[in-house]
Amino acid sequence: MEEKDIQSLLSHTDSLLNQTFWFSQKFKIKPDKEHFATSITYTDVLERRNDFINCLLSTINSFVYSKRKSSELINKFFEETSDFGNASAKLTFNAKKKFRPGHPQGQFGELLLFNFIQHFFSATPVLRKMSITTSNKHERFGADAIHYKINSNGENVFFLGESKCYKTKYKFKSAFKDSLNSISKSFEEINDELDLYLYEDGMIDGNLVEIVEKLKSNTLSNVKFELVCIIIYHETREIDKTNETEIKERIKEIIEEKFKSVGDEVYDKIDKGVLERINYIVFPVWKLDNLLDEFMKTLGA
Image: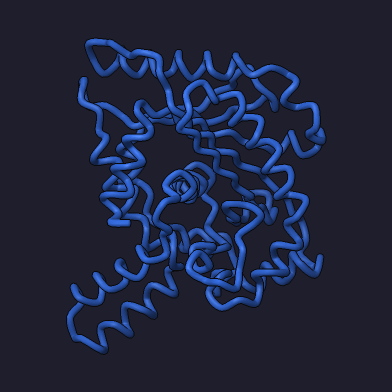
């Protein structure tokens, strides 16, 4: 496949990102490169919390089904009803059934990761793990996300993503360390994971099966891996500012301070070559437990 073909598989993320405040810069962490910081955005002093949740949930169909699979299902449902609205509603209903009641943190984090990898790295999803959440045949393991792109140098780049979401106060350092260990383990197990899912119906985007087969057989040239860790945590520091600019500056200060609090010991067990491929996305949430409750309530799970 050509680069333009891969890009055509990306789903819509702009609406969600319009409800977030984000920036990239170098922080006092390893590896020494630009990483991403995000949060729910504000309009003046109004937090766009409900709009953020609604836009995030509007990406569920794309999270569960590839564009090809969505089109097949919509056509099937339309043939049954001759009603596009009914067909679209049925697709969304089926997608929502893949979400497990009682697991808001993991599912919220994975859905956010799915959107951010596409938006920040222009990498299309390869693996659709939500199809196994209702299956008794599989136990989920490995990376929370696997995405793919062809970069401007002609490299075949695979992005492995890991999500950590902590409701507990003062757990940022623990979440940071856990994400490093988890993504390192997922990277080591990538070939085993591809073995498990490659020939399961609907798990790998049909447009990308040949690419994944070549990766697995080691016949794909110019392969590069990038590792993405999203850390979602409960923030307690007050913002208490009087306009949008001051609020965003305060959020930025808080995130910078959080990264400064991470000591060098968290990197001790991470291979240097692996560490250099890690990209962080940090996402502080005020009253995270309430946000997760609202997420599941709006989802209807």
